[in-house]
Image 1 (cartoon, rainbow, N blue to C red):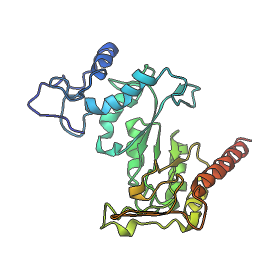
Image 2: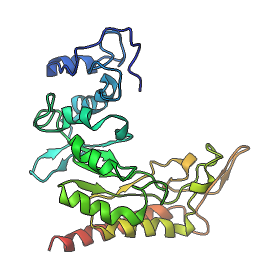
Image 3: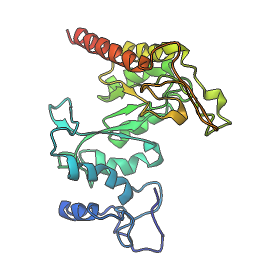
Image 4: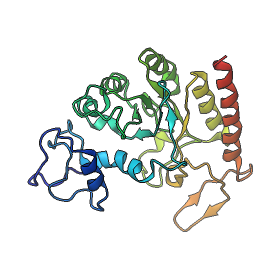
Length: 273
């Protein structure tokens, strides 16, 4: 996302308009029109752009009252929308804290735009940044075990302990495998073979071992990164050979997901006893 042309007219530093004004801005089709390119003035990494804030507010304005809109009940008993924020570390903890801490100068806590905000954990030092920023928790996203500190299964226990000590959620992310060499030919070292479902199950077991409240599945059927879990049959085009699940059924990973989801629910019931 861009902050637009620096010669444009900017809003005053860390100025927060009335909710009615935010609603009007977010109803426009162009998120970077002159004069309203940034909700926070500066172009440095300490600011949050209007484009970024739009990602939070727009779903709430359009769909927040719908019964199908997912909400998570937090420790205070409030049912709030849950946001996973990718590359959250690109914005400084100080900028996030303006919005996400209860006493921040432009806090959205206890407002119609409050939510459960989950930051991306990549490096070990991000744990303290996420805490200082006022996030509600952290997730690891990457499906390749060992790719980052956060995505390495061996670190999940320590991360969970940190989160428990600081009243944060830890959401480990799992995937069925990983291969993106069709779009990133240089990245072969991060390929993770599915091993007929064993890689997926190993990741799921590692996640459940630390007793998380939520486990996220990094997939969204991204065939170009080899993380799909939807049904698959053998398929070849002139430029690509799609990976299938033979000798297993096309629904292998959906079945594994269902089985582990049921196991997760039973495990959580025992944790709470």
